[in-house]
Length: 317
Image (cartoon, rainbow, N blue to C red; front, side, top):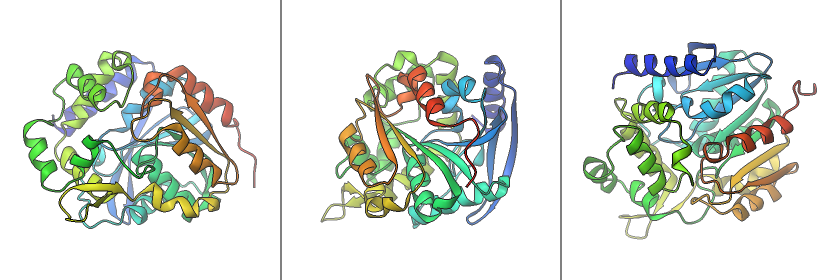
């Protein structure tokens, strides 16, 4: 799958959902790159930052509801989608994540915006909110922000182990070839409780995104930066992303909502409650019968939670 074909596939999918989207590239200075951005709807800006090994299209189940009230902004994160490959070796993920969100908002001409994010995108959003609390009007975190728990499932620890992950991807963890492969992979990783709820056309598109040149390599390099090696330095053990931010979460002054799947394999809802307790204005809503991607399992519940949390026009500061 090349980028031009993927662009065509996802454009057709937006059109089939009746969504009139606008696509462009935003140039970032640090790190220097061109970030692909899709926009839909009008109103106050709402930036949705997807998780690892994914693309902006993954937010599709939420878009009809959100675009009815907001200018929804969907960037492909570095290493993903039409933004293209990115080498995470040696990258300080915290600094990178905060700089990515800052550069994106600057490139869009936005001094302040509401952010909604998942997994690695959630970590990026939190890192940015800690560094620039005045630029975030509201923050929504869907699913566990990357590295919230001390321990991770074996699958993610293996993927986070340098060298071993390359061998696994060359043999048993190849990118999904189609919708069936994507659903099977999500079910094995317990990313969703109900893989059958992923629409066929969306599953095909996300599988295509995972096969873009450099996508799996970018994800493997990124995951390596999240994990702390065990004593021997051979196998990945604990995580160092959101957990490392925890002592500074009191700086996130904006209203914050955690929408946390009851069956999230990367951290139980109590992990999210612990994060929320560190923040001055945060609360957690547990999404029942949902995994790490709660808006896939329960799109209506998540859309309703977001719309009830976000004012149509945030109050001026």
